[in-house]
Length: 443
Ligand SMILES: Cc1ncc(COP(=O)(O)O)c(C=O)c1O
Image 1: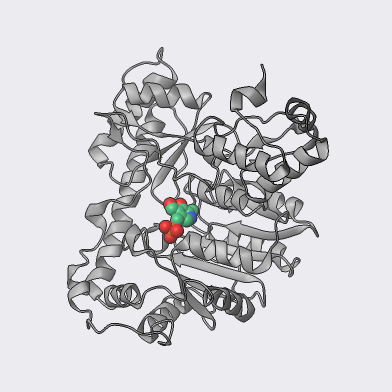
Image 2: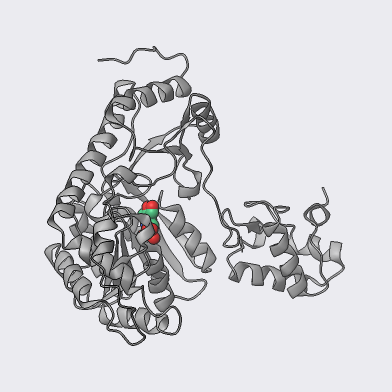
């Protein structure tokens, strides 16, 4: 197979070759995950020096479009930071348990909060964060034992994570991540030229032995999900938070980031590993699962230097998160009825999660879902399972984008799955995983 020709890679300089590969990815000729030709093969095909092709690959690597090198070969990353990736659309007629969204029926109606806005246009130079929101955020964090001395408002959990990583790390730095872990974080690391170091997790989050073994003088940062871990639903308990804290305390130079993306609807209490950390820490607490993804807002708490770097860098760009959004969130957080609604939403998500885990258990299928919006089910074959479930009318997601070294599994989002429908999903999955299995579940 003539790979360069098949992919249409061309160019007479490193920059032209890199641009040609980038265009190939953009136009779909070079698919995500595809191996690129070796430096030597491409150099020969294009009649260029190996140094020129190596320079082109280096450029692509720095842009996060390709990964790997040397004997393992260079590949296009699975989710290049180039195209707008649409999550796979549920096949027509199939019920969507793949998307990962909160249940729209459990999100608050924004109209009363919007009506309460004062309507005066904001100006440059306004105090940021909005003092009312800052006060509420500080109260929430302090109630959970999180220092709230330095706070910023950012555009969601991912915006906060990216800005904190950028404030401390450089391309090539190593970041310890949960495996399985949130695909968005894995993609972000690739796009920033950072190197993911997978660490095994269980239902209580990162395993202390695995974390201790993974940390080294080369570790730049650790990203942890304290609750509603995506995809497995893992959540810290007090003992796990304490054990992880003891390990991280021995590594004061490592940046520790906690991604509390689901906050009050996670269905598990807030435990943290950072409360006594003096420097290099940040927690992002997003409102996107509890108040709605389109609010694009998260509270970022951290040590004074980290928060100052994030705010200082941002002041050269977008400046701040719109005070209209900040005022809407402050208004929602000041409403006792909304507070009650969030507690109810957390209970509903918990019931829906447990209904599916219990129904699967009655078929002898083990699943993970201690908190959050998803159920994680280990399987032997992801693609075949997804396809067979789609044919049975249920769109679920392959685990592959969430995994580095951990074994195959599928993710089933239960945020909108009524308790009475859980047995139907469980029996469809039982049938798919083992068609010879008895059809009626054990009592
Ligand atoms: C673990 C995790 N972190 C972050 C996010 C994204 O949060 P945000 O929309 O606030 O950026 C998600 C979304 O599902 C998530 O599961």
